[in-house]
Image (cartoon, rainbow, N blue to C red):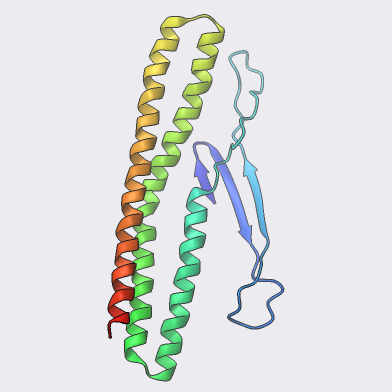
Length: 181
């Protein structure tokens, strides 16, 4: 479930299908349902649904990616433990810890980005209405707020890139330390 404003994005992933052997990659089905909040226009009539209501699943996408990586690392650690390879087991466990830390650190950043996107979309709608109603004062106020929301979204994206780079470097260092032994 991904929450964006008052909207929801529900995603269900099936287990792998067409998988011939355990451990092989295989396709899966993804079911998506968007539940959009009921919005009314200034006349009390149902407002037109905006494209993308219910979010775009940015948190779900990152969670899915990281959960796949965590699963692979857990298999690595489990196989290493079964074969008595303590070094490989520690490597797998460290990978699990790094991916989990990335997920925990990135989730609030993704919430900031999602909230800024929602605000930006709502303000854009209000701005367009102000222009259509030939209300330059309201349009100017809304343009200022719209710029602030856009800056907040850009700042969130920058934080997310910094977070991603931090963990990419940690994984590179981990892999290089393993390769040098």
